[in-house]
Image (cartoon, rainbow, N blue to C red; front, side, top):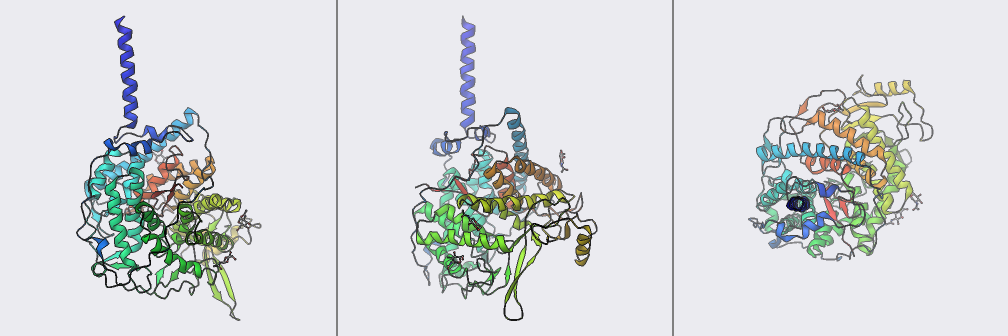
Length: 598
Ligand SMILES: *[C@@H]1O[C@H](CO)[C@@H](O)[C@H](O)[C@H]1NC(C)=O
Ligand SMILES: *[C@@H]1O[C@H](CO)[C@@H](O)[C@H](O)[C@H]1NC(C)=O
Ligand SMILES: *[C@@H]1O[C@H](CO)[C@@H](O)[C@H](O)[C@H]1NC(C)=O
């Protein structure tokens, strides 16, 4: 009689232990986020977030300077007010069906392998470079290139959370709570990098964990960045003179900046206003975006803005070079995403949708091209467009079939735009653009695409037959040509891979939006190639030449490796409800901001 009773007791205990294990904070808790519970069931993340007893008591220490006490010579206007959350959004993600146990087991193995690679880099950062901006992955040294506020630590917070590394997460929060944003290792602070890495990282970690210390630090950085708007025309400076900014006497706006720089503040400042209930951040950045909106149709390529702009003169029309790649990229990225975060219910927020649709139509017509490749695959690559004056003052756009790794985010953005604006032609274009980057990865010997390269334009999208002689002659015209380039490529102008995320970013978005297996399989191929080529004894390093196998590496690992690249790889193989695109919008550093509900 006693025995079965005991066995039952043990069974009850085991069930209890398993249950507790699933929901207790631990470095190894991953299971709850990978149960295939699609739909509206209880969310482990939210449950954890609301259980105050499980959150360590960490209080943020005040920075040595209070950025909210600056007396502005040129105080920005406090309107428009932050509009209420968007009423209803169209569905973004594919509705996934439960998978067979054997398929799920494969994906789970892949997910754990990605987490292992992250864990190795993280452990080395902790041991070799703790509280520094970046680890040097070959020498084990460190470097402070972003003002010395532990960029890698702040940038990695949400990845730690997402990967279920709770112990490491709270160790990191404790360290972040002590960062002094009143001191800087550099006399000038880079507005763009500080916004996307530090403010973005803190906001996302707060959105996921609800930890107050993160909110306190996010507000400190937000107020630091806000001091960059203390200028005569209320346009932000590109670099904040750190000590001058504290005095409040006004800063001097640079004459020329890359357009991405003033164009990549909207998401962070809007989310900060949403979280604090203080509209001032939203109002300040809204004025910047008014300048872009007012002149969008007056440029040499109406619908887009030149790569270089002057916020000093509020001139966003004069230049002639157009691209969605480096220098401009996230200006465009933030237009559909601002619409996702804000909706279009007020005049000040409706401009984001208008600008997004306008640029998407323009880029589709003028920048994307079908390359001539041996298998005639129907893919798209994003090139550059120069608009020059011909004889009679007529403007002629000319497309240069050069592209770069940075441009690879655009496929995911068109897919997202396709869902947000319920437009199938954007979505189809997004699929072809993502396939373009997947094709480039597959083509190179290392299994990774180069930083910058050229291809051959097809005479037209319909007429795209492979012509080997034409490829050879186009390749020889380029002085950078290399004999061993894959067919279809005419240069690998910059043959490095520096751990960038944009290609896997688009593959992740396309997987979540279409549910098509090709994207998940491509992600795994890409991961293996990247992990193999970049592996070092400490972590992962940039690769010097992807046109050969076994290339040399460079002693360089930017924080986006942990913040973005590995996060996107990981999220392809998790439950699709983890960081669902219906609940979050990701900033340009892959930091997820929660979409407020009305
Ligand atoms: C710019 O042009 C687009 C497309 O023709 C149009 O929809 C939009 O209203 C115009 N924007 C402004 C500010 O005039
Ligand atoms: C979708 O976008 C394309 C390209 O801009 C446009 O021609 C088409 O009218 C749009 N369709 C819808 C339903 O909005
Ligand atoms: C990378 O390494 C793994 C394990 O050693 C191996 O299975 C895989 O085939 C390699 N991938 C590539 C692209 O070399």
